[in-house]
Image (tube, rainbow, N blue to C red):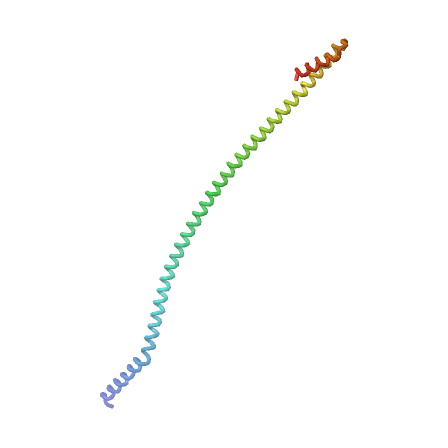
Length: 157
């Protein structure tokens, strides 16, 4: 065997192997590598987008929470104000009702006083008439005495 022939045949075999590898093996490997690189790049981009979306969602939830707390505080303040208004209205209504009750009681007291005075006047008139009748029984003119007693009774009223 000749060393040149071996070297040339090995060089030709190596060249055919390189051509075969470049023609049939290398393109699918490059495609697989490029597809994998694209998947990795897409995954990293998706991870970045997810991270940004998570930050945005966190910010939105924080803003929503702040807005909800502020709205809750406003509702509490409005409720406290409304409660104070209701209490004030109830106090005013109670005062008015108390004034009405007091006015009714005063009117009833005045009526009772008037009724008691009338009863007292009638009793005094009756006693005066009885006393005058006993004193004047001896006189005969009962019509004059009746007129006198009626005028006395009117004066007492």
